[in-house]
Amino acid sequence: MILAHLFEQFKPFCEFLTLNIRRIVRINSNISKTIIWTPGARYSHEMNRVVVVLCAIKPRSNPSNIGIIKPMLPPSMPKRLLLVLVASIVPGLLISCGASSTPTSTAIPPTQIQPPPTPSPTEPPLAARVNGEGIWLAEYQSELQRLQSASTETNTSLTSEEQRQKVLDELINSTLLAQAAVKNGYNVDDQTVQARLAELTNQAGGADKVSEWEAKYFYTEDTLHMALRRSMLAVLQRNQIINAVPQTADQVHARQILVTDEAAANQIYQNLQAGADFQEQAQIVDPLTGGDLGWFPRGYLFQPDVEAAAFSLQPEQFSPIIKTSYGFHIIEVVERDNQHPLSPDARLALQRQALMTWLQDQRKNSQIDILVQ
Image 1 (cartoon, rainbow, N blue to C red):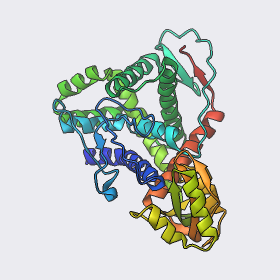
Image 2: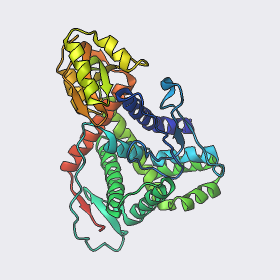
Image 3: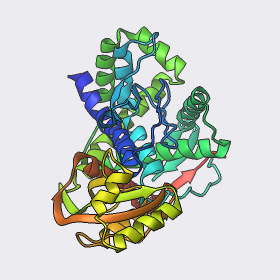
Image 4: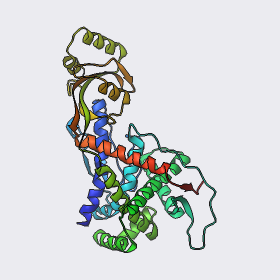
């Protein structure tokens, strides 16, 4: 039951990554990238540089299988031990991913650096304070080491400032979620965390296995305890936010013609204006899908100009040519419904938007002091 519970906490993040790949494929079915997730890492950058614990995503030759997630375990690490670690990383994974790839969310602004106060005799050195609650300097430094290790393993390049900001954002976001959970009546005390750690240690094969993993990935007993408690609370609050997203929304069913050559786009547009059938033209350009984008709500597509054009049209109307980084689009709306049931993919996208909006609002209304340079 414990491992099943942890996997259920981790599952939404995997689904978000699957969703993002599907959304890219919907815009351009010719895209084919291999995305590898390696053990020990927990940070996402561009969609072609996703790094995290436990899974691998590899597009297959069959387009319907693109984005399928499967385990990828290192030879030296038992699967049971990897599952043990999921609970301490889930909220940060979800938040980091959402922050880097939600198309309609604005970036969370960095917080002003405050001069570090003199610590009290009983207070450990801090990296930040969030509404008076301290984030330990030791935990921040361990997170930074994990990010740097992940960047090395995947040949990704972040400046020192980008690394620092990414780690602080993740810790602050998780802390805000955990604080809200407590305010809303949830409680995860030390006894609960210790009991959970004992159960997980037993499932992992003993304390020695956990100690080995802690040493390899820069955890101490205290920072692992703290990360697990915060994650348990943060997941509770996250679920409250995302479960409030309705099951239906205003949506359009659209298809597109997408070409990379402007002259070709102009010729197709002239054909359409002269009465050519849109579906036939789309089938010529994209024989696999006929340009069908399916049903989607506002905030779902990665290209906001394409989405805005779709929602400006009525059924059987088509748009002018829209230039994006993918090429030249022409959009036709097939049908509209202001209360259409959301697909699992679309609801996940709206849930992530809701989470990021919540975090942005919390940051605006919180006292956040950064104590590290």
